[in-house]
Image (cartoon, rainbow, N blue to C red; front, side, top):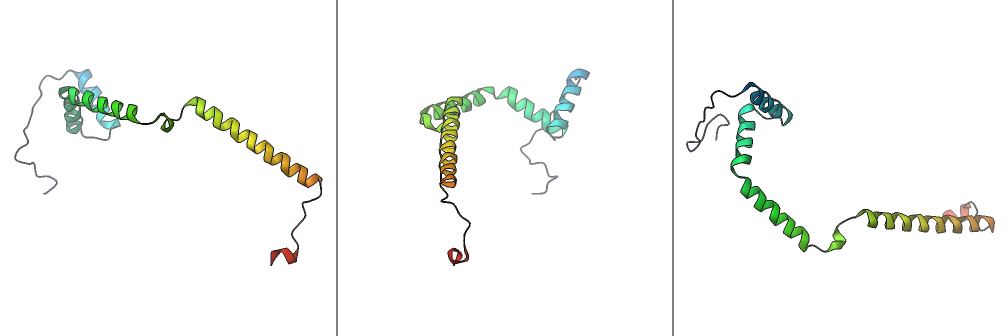
Length: 115
């Protein structure tokens, strides 16, 4: 289908006496959303005419999220616990490396070791 061809089932709507403030807001919103003024008006009309569908969609998403195990959700508490565990493990590794270096068990690789 040609990009400039309007499907036969599409209707045309003319809106008269649009207040300047509303027109300005709609124009600015269209610019921010990188849409034409016409496309922005259609999107806004769809949002206001079909809010029930949106609420139903959001309710389905909420129900789906509630059905998932809690372990899938990353909370501040889980992040804090994970960070603390990472710090503990890092400190143990650094401690072991330090003891190894002090004991003289670390050495530079020799030519024999590289083969």
